[in-house]
Length: 116
Length: 196
Image (cartoon, rainbow over all chains, first blue to last red; front, side, top):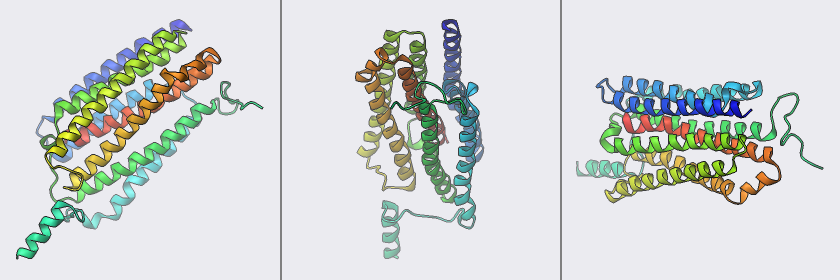
């Protein structure tokens, strides 16, 4: 049992090192001029890889029971629904300028209008 | 009457209460942070202009904080491994380091916040700052909660080790799962807020 844990500890160290390397990669890749959309996609792909390492090995998902997998699958599905419902409900406002009410920007806009 | 399946696994699901409980809690946390991420996506897509994260926030400081939090996740899993090897002093050492790294993360975050406030950059100033402070603020609150729980398990909570080892190991595993989740959220927040 102790050898088993020792093997796990070795694995944790390797995963930890991989996470650190991927963090450096994330930062370095962000300096490549690729535009916002592509930059976000690449950043999220690397973040997903890192997140998967944490979830699979640190959170022991690799050897987990079906009930947990089912819970997480349901969570992932509802999470996607949560993200996409507001997005798809607002397609007509993409690109329309929106100012947070009562913010400094709103006050400045009011003064700008008042001056004109 | 004793509560069943605290230490023994349920025969049908193969899980203890604590394991199912913590994963259900983490599922609810996914909804919480998911709602904020959804807000961020919507605000950013709908904005005519949105500043580049690197222009507003310090990339080196953000990278340092990411490294600190990942390191704390590694030491947290070493805590669990130490307990499985019957090493209480090893567990206390790694838990102390985990808490220390968490406090360091919070200190650096406070410095970032105070720096922003000193320049008059409050959440009210722009949509960018509103969502930045909300997301990182909620994340910081989760770290504070984790520090409190981990501190309890380092201090008075560790007495359970002497009466029911397996139950204590289960508790540390649950605390570890929560801590890894907090790290996971930051792994996504950091590139999205600081690098894009």
